[in-house]
Image (tube, rainbow, N blue to C red; front, side, top):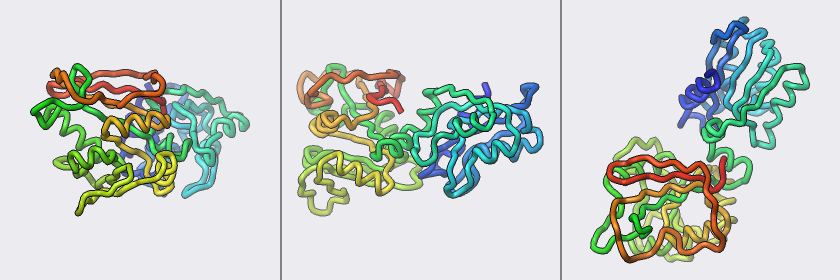
Length: 313
């Protein structure tokens, strides 16, 4: 339960820690009583462990620290959290996930070598908290989510209709844009629809970068950013510019190109209660089949949203 509480606390930092990950921590004494809680609140400020230990004070001595990601072991904007853990006299650390950052990982090993009992849960929920950040630091590219709306027969268009999905689904797409660093389409979609790709009608502290992959040219007056190089090189360049998450909105040809390069991490498929009978499929062919993991489904208005991972975080 304490790790679950740490997951809840971590979410309080969502949107304020960027480009850092969100992390939550709970200190539990030898009697099983919670004596301190904390989360990473803002970049450059104390990490979750330090905040939880400060809240616990002297009660941290001999206690257990539950944290969603192993304490960092390097000097960055703040001192290593491993030093704070050792200084507080923590007896045991339970971590929900490892730190994939090659410059900051290894905290559990440091603590184990210092005599602290350590336990790694390797929780999917803990890793999912920072799915974009984990891909960004480990693979040096953005975490790519392919979003598509389809009919029950797998088509992305319906003859005579502008939209495949319902209003609630389209509203959710604007929410997804608002929390993404960048949104992208291919030149086919640019020529067919010339979409704006901005987040509208939702709380959006900042708009995502709006990209078009392909050779162009863009229509006159377009506010999209043309990316014409090889996909992997473009993603590496975007990552170097701080883009951690990319929402890929199509179309099917661009999706196939991303899959061919093994650059799609997650699928979001809005399935509408319609039959099209014609038109392109969600992906314009695959070189090899892709196995999906962690498939979930939920109702969004009259549609069903399917979510699955190609690469788990």
